[in-house]
Image 1 (cartoon, helix red, strand yellow):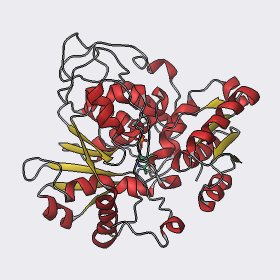
Image 2 (cartoon, rainbow, N blue to C red; image 1 turned 90 degrees about the vertical axis):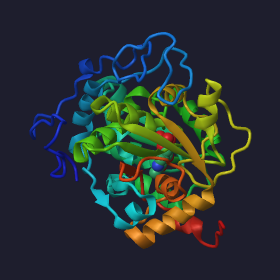
Image 3 (cartoon, helix red, strand yellow; image 1 turned 135 degrees about the vertical axis):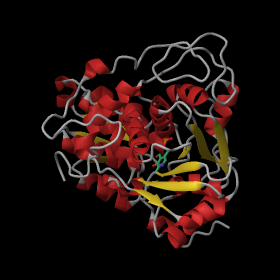
Image 4 (cartoon, helix red, strand yellow; image 1 turned 30 degrees about the horizontal axis):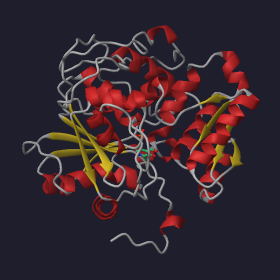
Length: 383
Ligand SMILES: Cc1ncc(COP(=O)(O)O)c(C=O)c1O
C-alpha cells in the first residue's frame, strides 16, 4: 500500500504527525555526522569525554557516529507513511524457557518481509532532487535489494540492484517485482558489489550501502524507537548482527529513550566479525567465514557500525548456525512464526542460556525478517 498507512502508531512518546503532515526535515539531522567524545554510559547525541569506557567495558578511541533522539524522530517521520507498525508478540513458552518476561518484535511482518525497508526509505528521503533523478543502486543477495527496490518505488526513483548470478530466483523475482532493474554479475556479493560501484561511475547512480551509512542507520533505528513506544518497560533488547546497521540504529534509538536499556548483539560464531572488531578496536577482515545464514555472513563489519556498537552495545554473544536453525524450528513450532536464520539468532541466544539477567527481566527479541529461502533449504542438513 502506498502513502500514509493506517498501521502507523499514534501513541506513546514518538511525536507522530497527522496524515498529510509527513515531513522530511534534514536540518533536524543535526548531530549525525559530528565526531564526538564519549562519557560513560554515553547517551545518543551527548558529547563524549576522553578516557571514558564504553557500555561494554572496551576502551573508546574517543570519536564516532552518534545519533540523537531527534534524528530518529526525523527518520521516523520519513519512513512511517510507508511501513507497517509491526506487532509485539508475547510467548509464554519462551518466558518459561528463559525465565524472562519476553516480547517478540515481529518485523518479519514488515513490507518486503524484513526491517530492511526502513533504512533505504530514510536514505532516499534525504537525497537531493538531483540525486533522486539520477537513480539509486545497491548490491545484495538478500533483503537489502528488496528494501531498496521497494523504497525507491515509493519515491518514484529509478533503482538498479546488482545480484550474484547464483542468487535465488525468488529474490530476483521479488526485486524485479518492486520495479528495480536487476543486473546479474559474479558469483559472490563482493563481485556483484564491484559491478555496482562500476555502475555508480558509468551511470551516475547513488550507492546505498547495506549497513555502514548514517542515514540508513537512522532509518533502521526507527525500529528501536517503535519498540520503546510499544513496550516502554523494556530492560533488555536482543538484536542480530551482520554488518551492524540494525543494531547500531536500534541501540542508539533505544538508549536515546531510556539510557538504562541493556543491548545484547548476537552473531553467528562462524562469522564473529563484530566481536573481533570491537575487541581489536578496528574493523577486521575475517579470513575464514563459516556461516550459511545470509544476513549474518559478513566478512568485514562497518567502521561506523563498529564504533557505534563499541559505545552503545553492552554485550556481544555468538552461537553456531546449528543452534540458530534450532531456534528457527522452535519459533515455528512454539510461536507459529516463520523467520529466517538471522532473525532467529536472538531467540537462539535466549534458548541457549547465553544471556544472563535477573528472572523476570523485561526483554525484547528482534525477529528481523521472514524471507526464508525455502528452495535453498531443500536437502540441507545442519545438525
Ligand atoms: C533479516 C535480517 N536480520 C538481521 C540482519 C543483520 O543486519 P545488519 O547487517 O544491519 O547487522 C540482516 C542483514 O541482512 C537481515 O537480513
